[in-house]
Length: 431
Image (tube, rainbow, N blue to C red; front, side, top):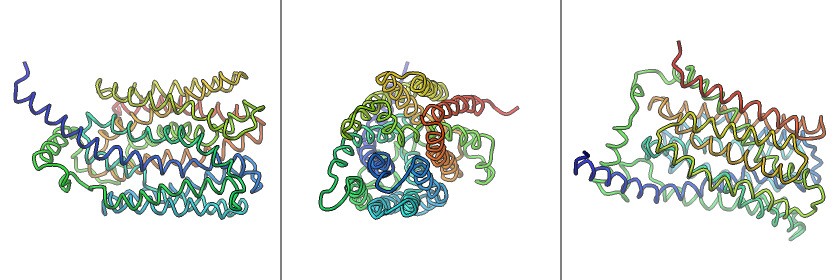
């Protein structure tokens, strides 16, 4: 029988966590949406930009790859600087520079200038995702982590759902005030990042101990909960360098590479896959509305799946099952010529990949020591960013070489199968 004191402690903990959710998750969600818009709006701009700048699929893929190359190069330093200076300052800096560099993309006049500008956007964004993931570990104990991750990462499919029809409508502004539709897209969608970057500096609190919006007793409850759920072994005196090159971090990095390859392939190429399927469709706004279908279902599925993972305190199966679902989705797209079957395949891809992403980070955090967590999270995320950097180039090349997306989607499906195997291996202690 649970003692009344224990019941009261549980109730108080839940009240504190609800307050933290209300204070942080909504704002971080807005930051995530603004950031992801600036990352993926090039996929919609491509519907008219590629012809204007003389880009084929390989050139367009290379421009996207350069974005991620810049991201990877500055990923770990950025996360270490966030740990040193705090999320309030560093995330504010990231958001402001994202807005400036993304808006500057309207200045592209050909392939080379686009390459440079996308590289700068990638450098500006470096460290945002791992920085926010690290920030969540300061505020949310493990028993709440998958839900916190999911509500944050819903920002990605929510962005696609919102930005798809919106971007199609903005592209139809072609010629207004002398700007092409794709230029309006980059300009207008950079504004939220600039505004939120300024707000971030005044709104965020770096650590629970500094939270004036929590009472002293609430801060104490939160700290006790975080300390109590500190996983065994994470306080071991292991050097940061030893851990980031350990077996578990290497396997997690490779597995994340496989997941993000699918996420990026979906984000970058879905509008063009849809246009290829619905060849008779001529309006860009209609393509945008079709592209919003898959993320609509994803936004519904992610919190349900992550909450189930938290309730059962199970992470591995809750990551690999949706990865398998995404692989099936890619295969459906490649084997069927029926347009709405392929749309259903994109739904499976989106729901599966994003659901796996949310639980993956809840699986990862307990395996990392507190000391090495900033560098390890950045390294694992860099593996994903490497997948994101390579996938546009590989998919673009295979699309040009074969005349369809089928071979590239088989590649993405195969990597998901490999990622599933890697996650089972990382959970097994080395012999």
